[in-house]
Length: 236
Image (cartoon, rainbow, N blue to C red; front, side, top):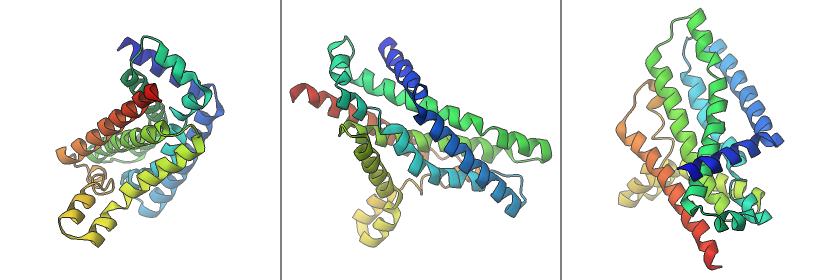
């Protein structure tokens, strides 16, 4: 695990040494703050349910920007070869980079804790939906990052990685509609992959094991596929 944390620390520092992290964080807080004020004003309810559901949409656009450089930049600059010559395995590189992106995400979400604090000062919100909502946001965004990491492992171009990541996430987002169109057993299977369906219960304060398992499976799949993609470079 020492190598994993070394890679994660290196990657996290590189985020904050470039303007990318600050731009993404600022954009996220600007949009989240606007949505919070808008939903609170219209709903007049001490709840973050609407905000949590809308932040789920924000991940669709912001996560590709966070994940696009993870492996694509390493391959473009040739530093991935240097990493692979060190006593570090592919899965350690991939896992370390994934953890760094998750830590950046946690920083972003941590800054939004002012919103529930605001609700507790001026109201009496239900704690269940707040806790479940934040857990859902972390799981969903982490799963999105794993997909973005895999997309980044397939190319040396960050823009291509971002577009590919967005395309894959959009496919998972729309899979419910696609499943209904296909119908039958195949349609049921496709509908099950919908990230929307597996997120709906979290803002309601309900944590279902099938939804947690779905997101954890997506995370593991993204890490495994990224590792396999990185390993294939040894044979090129």
